[in-house]
Length: 118
Image (cartoon, rainbow, N blue to C red; front, top):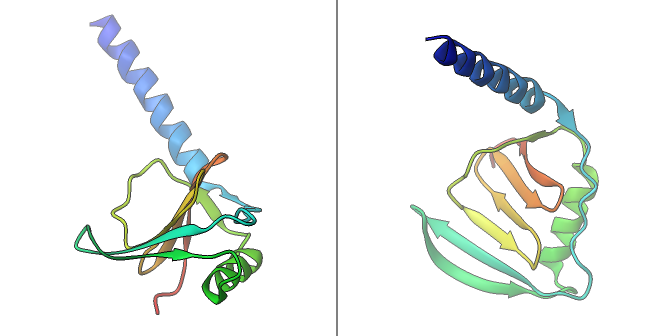
């Protein structure tokens, strides 16, 4: 019985820590790799319906780079797995653009930023 209470206490402390950590926002200084084409996948209902490559000199990649430059603030750590929507990936990262959030997964961790739906 004491072991169960002990384990419950440890789980509760872990949960509280996770809530506290996930409630803090962070500044992200993410940059897309230079001279590396990126993969763009469009998903519907969890299944890929379109795929293309984004070249380093493309207008789309330039817009994504500028978006990250002006959206460095307000990211939160997240351990959740998200269903992909508009999914951009490279060798060591992925970005999932959803209706009202952006999920960045890279070497520093996985983060989410709430955005206005368009």
